[in-house]
Image (tube, rainbow, N blue to C red; front, side, top):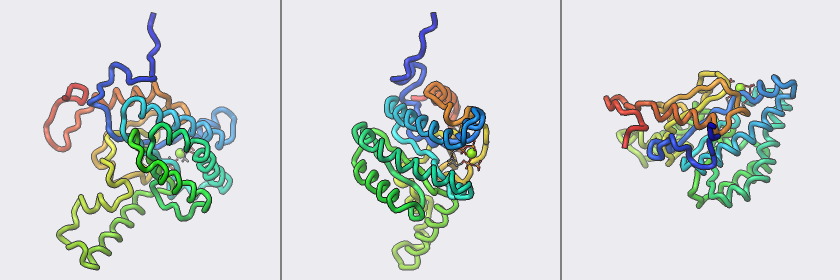
Length: 257
Ligand code: IPE
Ligand code: IPE
Ligand code: MG
């Protein structure tokens, strides 16, 4: 008889040393998941929230240090007002409900994006969550809200230009390191693996600088369907990659040291 896989600990075919340190996720397909079931789109977002909660716990259980999820893009304001309002309320509700547990489990939460257009109450809550969990070390959880990669690069460029203008930085000191330092993800290493669900194969303005050398994994599953078994498959796929970074290293990750 085939034993069902126990997903509470790292599946035995995954090599702890060849796991990604940082996983980024474009959580796509909530709306289609709901529509397929004859439900309103917001029901998909509600279900999607459960998926992300379990993925975070899974990263913690399996020893993956950082998870960055795309929750709301700068372009998502183009959606009907009711959907945008629902999403912002959902973030508010989730944060209130989950903060104590995240704190208990050693999650450090950070929000990436321009939070200033969000409702003040939500901004305060986000700020509080970041402050309260600041010293936690078990898993870093980045939530991109009102995030746009091009906007992030423009802001970083402005910051650097300002430093050069006031003499804090010379033109020669402007390099990859100084630019990375001006990004919202600093000092986190770049994602090793990007997962996008729902069959779309584009970045939709997500982390354009940070994903320059990331392994890209696309699955047709809709976000609310992306469970631990699906994550297991994505990690199996990742461990078969040969990350060469322009060199010639021929060993798949799983066989590396
Ligand atoms: C992703 O699901 C969640 C957000 C963008 C907030 P979608 O809402 O984009 O779902 P689809 O792509 O319309 O199915
Ligand atoms: C990307 O999904 C943004 C998030 C997952 C938050 P979208 O559904 O907004 O992306 P497009 O519009 O299909 O590119
Ligand atoms: Mg979508």
